[in-house]
Image (cartoon, rainbow, N blue to C red):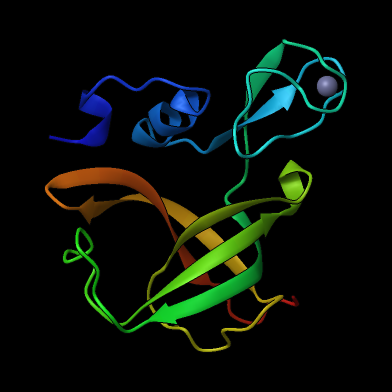
Length: 141
Ligand SMILES: [Zn+2]
């Protein structure tokens, strides 16, 4: 069973449904155009309840990263070590997303440019839609 085959509720539901359909989308206020993440039902900038979900290019720069050497319950499908990255998205007002780094970690550093692709990550017995980030060679960070 994939995660999206179960009912998804909450403000971030469209995020998961979007990933399951192959699209990264984030919430954006229709009134003041502020991007939000984590997802919200109401804009914290202007108070509007009118939140839109807009497609976002899955690319940005590494805000922070960590390499995990210890396996935790539920992450057996990932294997160790793995690198988690927090990516700042310039096309979404600098909102930041968490994901796994896939492939080579050559050039891994804060500020390095990465590109995401939508994949799944096995968490326990469930395949969760996820962004897997890859280093972009030669890009200025
Ligand atoms: Zn707003």
